[in-house]
Length: 236
Image (cartoon, rainbow, N blue to C red; front, top):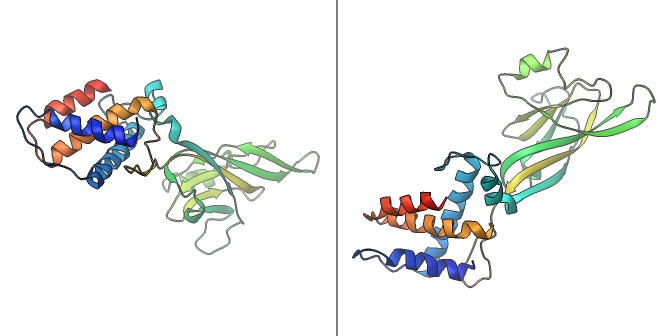
């Protein structure tokens, strides 16, 4: 469905008023509210705050709803952090190095480089970080059996999200040349007449139109809001 068709569909949805009169919306206003609906659609399908209570990848429908936004980026791991406020043996993936279209985190991997204990050669392998929080950091960093310690040519660095970005904490026996982030990118901002159509899968466009109508009805305090919401839930 093109953005022009979405405009028509939203107007038709609002015209079925059962005697109620709606104000005429300018093209720019409809663009704004359709983009608002797209943003709300993505976040509710990602989080599970929807009528089915299913978050991203919990069902095939949720996968199909957002599949066109799934993106992966390779980011340089950078240098070992040595500042007084940095955690020992850590690497920081700064927020400024995140992809420009980054919206929501999905999962990640890292490449680690170390000296092989048998051959003595420099070796690089892919690995998955261990999720770490401020509460679990102390226990994990002091655990002699923690997987972030290099053992038998494998290690999984601790990963923490902070105001700086992503902190990757090692045991000092390997470096992190690259960080691989899988994420949901920001959907394209649609605009009537600018050839920028909704880039979510086609099957979601009707749901987005109904959600736009629901938002507009809510904003003008229509008595039809509850019936429109029920129809939206049925379309899911």
